[in-house]
Length: 321
Image (tube, rainbow, N blue to C red):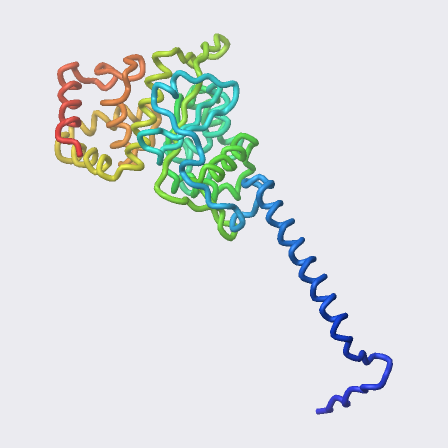
């Protein structure tokens, strides 16, 4: 092992110590440069869009970052673009109103197929061609697939984790940015995560039916209000464990197996995934108590009499938490 030669203190590469005054001036200049860099970083932090920043750098956004409205205010509003609010009585529910059913479908149909529809895959997302084929098999258009959507934050996070295998469209990417901005999702080390036990629900503005398609895409004021309240009840189910536990108890203990079978037959006809028991319970409570439009749900569609349907409603209303 060789040894390094001792430094040549008199050669051209050797620098003598500076005078004390010169050293202090360099220190002051270094401090000023450092201060300038810090101020520039702070300014960039404040001005750069939060959704454009890498996950670990995004500022933590509180629930109050999005304005809150009650149901009447949500229904009274009109917008030509996506409109995002929180439910005043339960800020854990984020509400997005879309200007029409097609815009909503472009943002959320792939998620609906994955979460709850027969023909969707549970461990992967459908590609664009597969999604179009699913819509065709069900006799739907992009707009008529669902009139409203509802998802807990944990499920939204898993959807975007799985999205590495497909190319998301512009509306899906915009949705991911808004969910991040609103504090439902965050990206940590490249992995999408739910921030807390929140939920997203969506509905749309009124619209006329498209006579060129066989599907019913009409949405009048009565149907729109019914869709909103139906979806909000799903949000309550996702964010209020006491309410969810009550619905589960009614399903298991106050409904007979024959009645549960009736519900499964009805939901199967709507192309819901019967393997998801939680989906059955959640849809049951929303349809029984929070779907006022008889065109969307009624006793005949369930295959029971009005008396039986009202009795089911009373069993679900009885002694809620």
